Amino acid sequence: MDDIWSKYDTDNNGYLDKEESFKLAQETAGFIDTDNPIEIQRADFDKIYAQIDVDNSGKIVKLEMAHFIKKFLP
Image 1 (cartoon, rainbow, N blue to C red):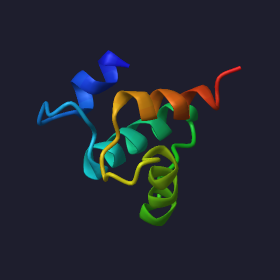
Image 2 (cartoon, rainbow, N blue to C red; image 1 turned 180 degrees about the vertical axis):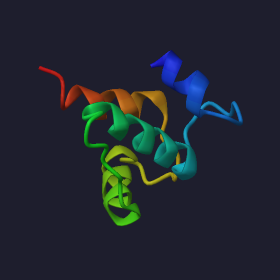
Image 3 (spheres, helix red, strand yellow; image 1 turned 90 degrees about the vertical axis):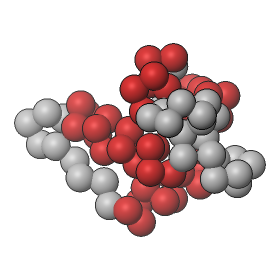
């Protein structure tokens, strides 16, 4: 998680804003299937962002991201 923050929290404010999160999503989607990269549409991203930003602060903190990621880990 710290590696994600150091790369995408470009203004070093301790959270990912919507644009920083969108960049993370776009780059992460490319790792899912490198032969057929996925382009994330803004409307789809907005839905995902709303699920991660559970307190509707417009910011994603590490704890929110960790809870979201845990949903997908076995």
